[in-house]
Amino acid sequence: MFDTVTFNGVDSTANCMYPGFVKCTGEGYMQLGWIQTFIAVYECGSFTKAANRLGITQPAVTQQIRSLEKALGQELFDRTPQGADPTEEGQILASETKQAISDLNQTLSRRLGTTLADRPLRLGGPAALMSERVLPSLAQLTADGMDIDISLDTSSNLLEDLKASTVDMAISSIQPRCRGIDSTPLNDEDLVLVASREMADELPPGILEVDGERALKKLPMVTNGESEPITRHYWQTVFESPPPARPALVVSDMRAVKSAVVASVGIAVLPSFLCTEEISRDNLVVLMEPEIPPITTFYLATRSGTLNDPSIAKFHDHLLTAAKAW
Image (cartoon, rainbow, N blue to C red):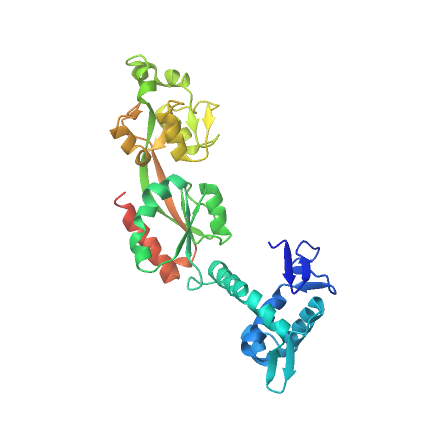
């Protein structure tokens, strides 16, 4: 938000008690939308043509311009039988605000447009999966001219964003179970319990096979949340018990969890796609290999009915196809 707006020596503050208005040193408050109307009249050269462009009545345009002139203490147009000619002060105001109004209109159209022709397609997902799996698969879509906005957040937050229509599609490790949201399984990822080579070598040989859960409780745990679901799922699947009550380190991004484990801060349960390279380099060691590896399923969620939009349907199909190779 602008702290001050200055025009031809008139200094005004945007911090006023009326939302959408700017306090002027002239009379009263200036509504920022009046500048939009002013630019329309300036470009059309006519109050009537500006009203048609803006979709409002000609008297409304006249009232807004009069209010703007009164607030600024300046005459902005000379009224003529042919229309409206800008005064010198009007020329100055137009030159100082026209580009800013144009940029604002483009931003609002891009971000708040009601159709995908007006704005990018908005996809949300967990940071690690988006970075490692999803983003590398989008090259063909962007090459075809599709504009995409990516949001990185937790699954619970992203599902709320989807319900609120602030994203068009969400990738979630939580299966949506609410009216108005449809979901399709996207892919399954094995979960692995890993430690650094240094920390793994400090464990007595064979101890995990004999007394795995008790031995692991003595090691610090790193998670990306106090109730981090994949750690809980791993422990319940492999040990039929909850994980250690208090992790030694909580960090919000799984990629940071991996870095902490490589540095011997503690052990962690991570999706296999995030660890493959570090395991191949022997920087990480898989501590246990259960007969049936625990998995986490990611779901591709949309609002009911939105797959009727060709752009959303194309993006949805593209991700489902790409996920087969992950």
